[in-house]
Image (tube, rainbow, N blue to C red; front, top):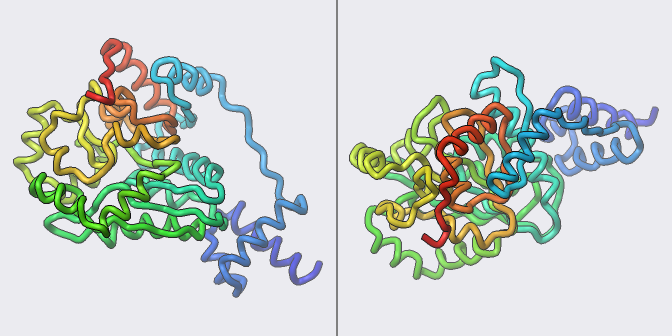
Length: 328
């Protein structure tokens, strides 16, 4: 076996069998990350690696069809064994979502990301490969009274861009402005308008459903983005969570929630202009905000574990066919 064939074998074994990252393999072989990508590609092309997808479990397939009937979305239901924790469930769903999004990335595609716990997990499972002319743009601001947001949100956006050798567009604004008038003024600035223009051209929007409570509570509610008074007010208004830091009720309404005038992410009406809107969710705490997102028309593709999907469908059934217009 030649030296190159040895390298192809080692790279493929580390990547597919040991679940090592491209960077770890590059360090082991003493080569660049792009060389590792080429070695893994060669392993597939020469037949050293055979990738197959097992047929979906019949139960998960039925749930997927049920979600499509109820909400009109393309549902990717991930079977998860009983007893799995919320953290483990998220990890498995994130793996599927990462591979799906990677497959959808084509030359020239603009990927919009809303930072958060769920999307951070998804980005870790993107399959690295160069995608010429692609771009990754941050969809919502991340600064708050405690931090600039750059170390957390910036690292997520940059990692996604690095996976595809894509241009990166950060969004240097707060998650929520203190005053709606400040947001309106900032939206007139040329530097901010430039990022907003890129957001508007996004082919894919990738986001989670932020939950106000639960073991995987959204970063928005757990990391100082909102004051205690804000949270009290939101509960009084019936808010159950958010997508892209735009707050939602379970019935899908959002336009009359005062804090949304200060939010910096795209609202459901703006999201609806993007061809593919991918929501990733795992865990029962996500059901209420996810229902809000689905009823607001914010989602075209849903990646969800089977147990959460069943709870979602049952809650929707018991709650009746309530659906808010995205133009409300």
